[in-house]
Length: 141
Image (cartoon, rainbow, N blue to C red):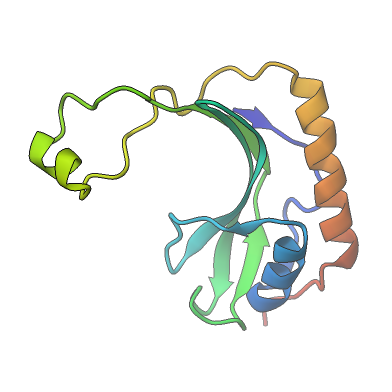
């Protein structure tokens, strides 16, 4: 994992407004969100079993994440590299795998070292700068 310096860290926004800006930059709400926190994610690089993600975490300060009016505060953006397990998962049920019900496997390495760090950090920084220049900041009141 590589933490990134960005002007977005610590800023607050209305969730619905932020989501539109992140979506315009190809970033989506990550699947692991909860009502009190989440991440905006995008794939910066994907080749075979290697995927490098840019993730921007946030916490909900007011409201709940299922509301476009929730006030969120951004944490430190980071890059993370997943190396997918392309073999059979020996610990899972063979019946589930064959039937197609077991469609996801844990990554072989969910935080692998990242080559070309500077290149990916620069690309991520440009994307974050475009977002932070347009984000509507909010205050908790």
